[in-house]
Image (cartoon, rainbow, N blue to C red):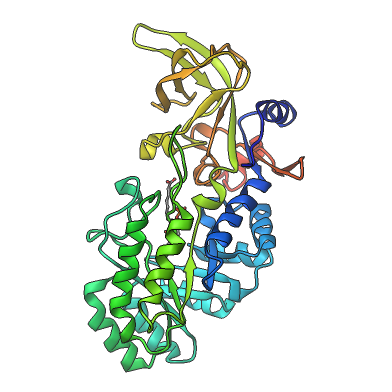
Length: 402
Ligand code: LLP
């Protein structure tokens, strides 16, 4: 049975810790990781949690305890992962547009590095030659993903080395005798269609023969999670069968270990964002519910037009009222238009589902509001894993010169 927190559990947490509040359910992360491991049980596959989705140190430690590795998108994420206890060989740094200094730092820390530009590859070759194996982040020219803003593999995307530059890459690899041990692609986020991953694998198969020291194929992340009622997630069993088939048909690739970098798939559904209703405002156009939050805390609806299921957990009557759910900040911050909810009263708790990935992580102090607190529910026990900001936090790094 799928792991879920109940309305009464969430209400109790809101009362204990206040709102707005991010709640993460550890056992749900375990369930999701179990799906991945189980689907790929017949193939040598390693999962690197794309920690950009949620970097709370307790989440990192928990995911480490499950046996997953970690994928990072900045040197600070690398340092957080090491701080959480991952050994460097379990930390992958898939870089994008970073300075060579940061690559040097990652190398000094001993983590695995995916390089995404010809320019940095050349600098890497000059500095380290064959002495430190490295991965190449390639752009496969595949359009995929739930939204153009989260599509990364298409022909106009800034990410990766365009696949058509492969001869330039091989020339540099040869010139400096670089040890390329992995090839990486990541086509986007929120991808349901298994065929997209198949296309990516096929692109990589074409270029595998250029690299003699390959050990790994890194297919990135981007698995879909069910944000809407009736949605389904990427079918992992179907994907695993496809991957097995494809590799079986390509003997030159069959010895390669497969890597994935799931972010949302591991931590999206584990997350609940609990808010409280400040004001109800009836206007000719809509009945607005203003909650004690805004896009400063959950930016996905405004930034990606993302849909998050919302429920009034203070009233279990039928969802037969129509509302626009908005925030309390100084510009338009609509969470949902014309959404059916059970009748809402001021003071009720509204929960946003599927808020674990890129929720807290993309939050800000806009309007000088505090960032929400975070709670981890594990083995039925709540643990406060981040305090709500305080007024001092707003001033912490400011230097008063006047
Ligand atoms: N690997 C790489 C190289 C990535 O760039 C990403 C996400 C992932 C893995 C993990 O993708 P996931 O499994 O989480 O879809 N803020 C957006 C998503 C941005 C994803 C950026 N890269 C959102 O809230 O939808």
